[in-house]
Image 1: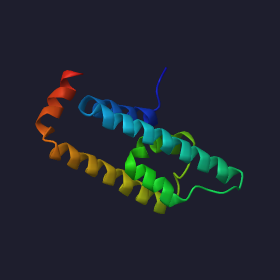
Image 2: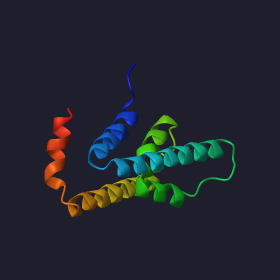
Image 3: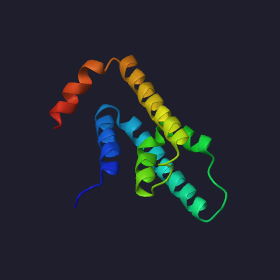
Image 4: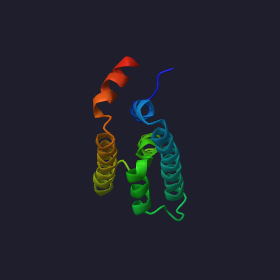
Length: 122
């Protein structure tokens, strides 16, 4: 079975994060599930002309780590993939989250040990 690329990137990120900080990876997985659910719900609401999830809510969840699930949902459900203004803000929230995680990594002094740890698991 061939896994779609939209699943592989978030899964690889979560796996690498789990090697470094399992609790943080678990939090990302929970936020990712929330992100996936919110994007799926918003897509269904758009189809049925019902109340939509505000874009600010989607982007906040993405910034808090939900991008791992929303990445998959956006591609799986083809949702929010054509609106340029949203895509720009989506990527800003993802980059902001990754930068914040990177700062945590540097602040904990594990920067020297993470790469050898990742390479030893390959």
